[in-house]
Length: 149
Length: 111
Image (cartoon, one colour):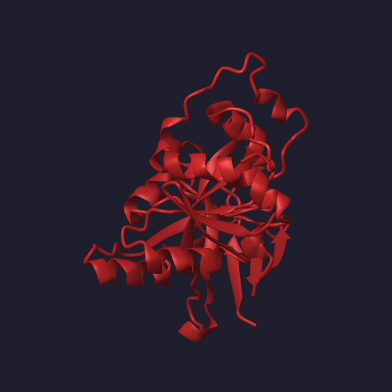
């Protein structure tokens, strides 16, 4: 199984580089209709075991030109509590620096919630929906984390 | 950061007692017609045992119910070239929330 090692930062915690891009179905639609297909967005995402679903900042929604697909309840105490937010469909990849492409963690269709995160110092939260495919070891004493998938 | 999708106790108290309708927040107005259609159809969908599945809505029409989000958006992307459609999970918790904007939930058995 591919293993990723990271260093914890005092300010941010466990940050992992990920790629967010359009789903293959959305790309096919855009190509069919001659619409622009934005490039994937690479972000440093915060691994957040307190988040049930993966969340993206509105700036990423804007960069990818995403159209909302689903209205979902979210309870974000740090952002006003219980409310309904738009959910979007994206393709999420956790790239591995050394493993071949076939061994990268790719989730072709992932529902993500739009939550303002930028003011809190990150653009994306990796939630338990993605972590459900991984083994996360958080080594606070050693100041590191390991993500195996 | 803690983010969950469960509804905390008391969240349904947002339904105004005076029956006044609150405009949809601006971010939700992008698919206002689809949300209103979903609201209108929610009791029937619940009555038919569709809770937990995904309904595809465009304007004032339902375009089928699917087992997964992926199936629903695949259908939507193939059918609607502009990508504008709702692939909404059938969740009874939405009823009281949407009632604030569109009025009380209609009875499933009413015409």
